Image (cartoon, rainbow, N blue to C red):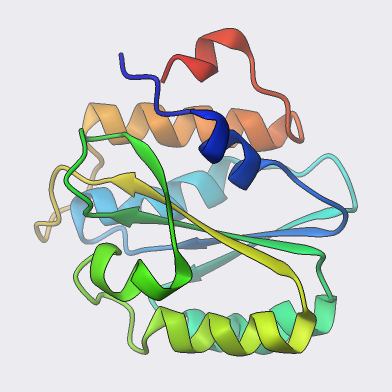
Length: 168
């Protein structure tokens, strides 16, 4: 198992104040279904944590994100950065158009979330999970599914990482 929950990833995932977790992706594109997978499993236990599943059209939830006035926004998406399947990595906002999944999103993510960040003044982080396959089929590979399960458990515990999660 890789130790992809390094200090940078842990800091990016950590809730701060009113935290908005936005998941992205399509269940019809194999590992791009990571976002919906996590969204289906997270049950926020704090009123300061909100989850929005933006699917493949994050521009449609931009106003909702702005209206909630979060202190921190975490974007979670499958990505292609040359890592091992299931590996987590922080991606700079300006790099998300190159590293998130093959433009399954209908509008550039950097543009959408630059506007959201500007309007909310929220800290914005992007966490990518390395995909193995983006083929047109349903289902996650085992490594991406394990990463998604660990992420859901993390947010269900509202920001607590168990030692065995940190080993993922």
